[in-house]
Image (tube, rainbow, N blue to C red; front, side, top):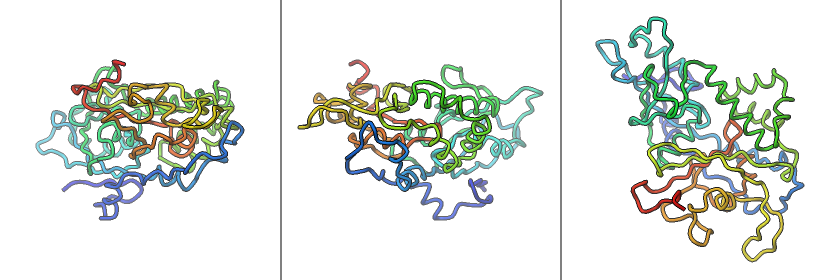
Length: 344
């Protein structure tokens, strides 16, 4: 019988309600009807919608983890482990539990360190991105329940495919490095991060490691720009799926304000939207009029499709992951189809 390890509860089989929660993606984004009254002088912290944020980031995913067949050093295969995990969590958060479960079935490494990694149908999983991002890249809005992953303790792919993981220090360096990068993008320098006491930095790390959303959010507030206009760029990372066999990632400046006039409007600084960002970062993803997505293209975050008029500030404040980044996933038709946005 399968062994269940459910986050936040004792080990047991999941209830019908928990399975239903795992099957459900994050609720529909609670989008503002318009960004009326929001301008360069608007305080960022005052634009946070706590109710919407809680709804957006509360999604969970059910994982079923099996040990790689070629690493089973026993007469019988171990039972898989089921994990009901927050979309905001990272796979390394569960390495200790998984190692303890599979340890009796592993061959001795004779003093060598483990090279822990996951794959889905042979595709290595980029463990330094949140589980929700990985699911958006792989499945879009149709996430299976459970998601079947294979766990490996040796034979990690090359560093070009996957950042090596040999211990919790690798996890900490990757996640806090991303958080520092997000602060730098927003502030234009690293002064805000450097002013954060080491005790607070450690508190942030512990909160991310345990997927403590409330504590992370409070620390994120301390590092926000004072106003929309003071923000140099929102921290937006774009994940491309479908163009190649690889999970490609793009980092592009995301200006908080746009000076182009809206349809029928007058030119002037207004909150930039997802559409404005795509026009700058990936124009071939749009149709000829640059007003809609090209056929077959979808843009999502936190498991839901994004309206193109979504303000970037709203995403940065209410839909960012624990690393302080908004992770936009762009899914396109297969690389073998006629669609080829990179060629543009």
